[in-house]
Image 1 (tube, helix red, strand yellow):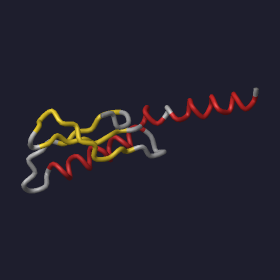
Image 2 (cartoon, helix red, strand yellow):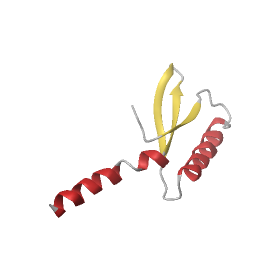
Image 3 (cartoon, rainbow, N blue to C red):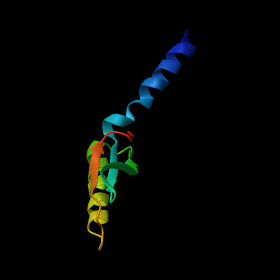
Length: 80
């Protein structure tokens, strides 16, 4: 019985990262509707920290000279 409890506990913890994770995406020059995964921010420092880092990375990429794609952050892990 204790082995089952440990396994269930691990499964629950695996899903906890979604609550604090943020993911950076971009579209593509050939498709404005594309969602290309760039990076997932999921540190132990929490949602605000991960969001701030995602937004900083978004701004960095977006401000590069010649960039014609859009970058954005979404709460949660990568979703195709």
